[in-house]
Every structure is written in structure tokens, then in C-alpha cells.
Amino acid sequence: MSTPEDKEARIVDARMRLRQRFEARQAATPALSDTAPMGTGQPNRHGMPRLPPGQHEVTNWPVLDLGQKPVVSKDVWRLELFGACAHPQVLDWSALMALPIVEDTSDFHCVTTWSRYDMRWRGVRFSDLAALAGVHDDAEHVLCHAYDHYTTNLPLVEALKDDVLIAFEVDGAPLPREHGGPARMITPQLYAWKGAKWISKIEFRVDDRPGFWEERGYSNRAHPWREDRYS
Image (cartoon, rainbow, N blue to C red; front, side):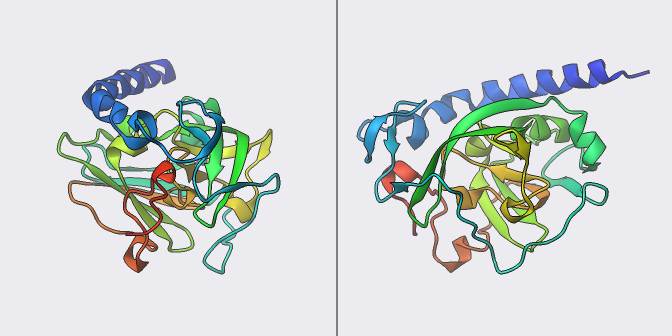
């Protein structure tokens, strides 16, 4: 009979294989390789200027959404993994909590020109979910869906970075509803709209499909240190 330890070992093994597949391409992404990044301040964790161009630091946490804040309890919350993967499945809250939990501190850059430093997150790595789903070798893109019908797309090479989480705690407290609780995705090396609040589905794709803001002229790439806000 399979044990939780066996499951965790399989996820770690699959994650390491994904890491090997994408390692060189991740190192070449703009947030890790740009030789002339724009911005100001001391270098961040990845050697980029702490404050990307056109941004200003805030100490509060502004709330932005599509005009609704869905009420999703942990009892009814579900996360569907589907698309270009070998093991499509639906996770409930207990299944999410059974996955490896990590803590990570990162900065948060909103396309509306504010940045907040050193946010302490707790959650599950996106890469562990991709490993659990058994992402197909030809999968290159991700489309995230949310309970408020929001969608956003990003390249799989960006989504698999270690600081991309499905987060359920921030700064030592449960993620507030207005910021996407009970769980949201965070993408610290991209503008924050690439991380869906109230996340409900992760769709692995061979081809790219624009999300809500991308269909309305926002960038597919969303690299803060190139001020890549719009297409």
C-alpha cells in the first residue's frame, strides 16, 4: 500500500526531473539573466534592482480585483489540475495540505505601479503540483482559472520556478479573502496579475492562450525589470 512518504518521494522525483528539463531555460529568463535590468535600489535575491522601473514601494497591501470577492470556504475549495498532463485530478483542501509545504519570502510587484517588499508566504510549490499531475513533455504553457472567473496565462518555464507558490498564508496569518483566500498563486519574478487570486483550476497547455488581462492588451511576458506591462 502506498504511504504518504511514498507519494512525497514520487513528487520530489518528478519535480527534480522537471527541474532538469527546464533548468537552463529558467536561468535564461529575464528575471535571472538580464544583463541590463532597469530599476533602482540594492540588488534583490536574484541580482535584479530591488525596485523595478515605474514602481514605488508601499507598506500597505492594496486590494485589486474584478469587482467581486468570492466567498470560498476550505470545505468547498477545490483545485483542478487538467490539460496536457498524465494524471488530471481534483484536489480538496486536505489533499493540498498533504503535499510538501514550504515557506518563502519574496517581493510583490503590481502592474499598477506599487511594490511591497519581503512578504512571507507559506504554501505549496507550483512545481510540486505539476509533478503530481505528470505534465506532458510537450506542455509549454499554463492557464490559471479562478473562482471569480479570472484567467491568466504564463509560460511553464516561469511557473515552475521555486518561488511560485499556491499560497494559503502570508506574514504568519491565513491569506485574507480580499487577497485571494483561501489560496492564490504568486509569481514573484513577474508582475502579480500573473498569479490568480481564488485559484480554482490549473490548465497545462501545449499552446498558449491569453487570459483576462492579456486579451485586453496586457503583456504575455510581464517582466517587471523590463517594464513589460503591455503587449
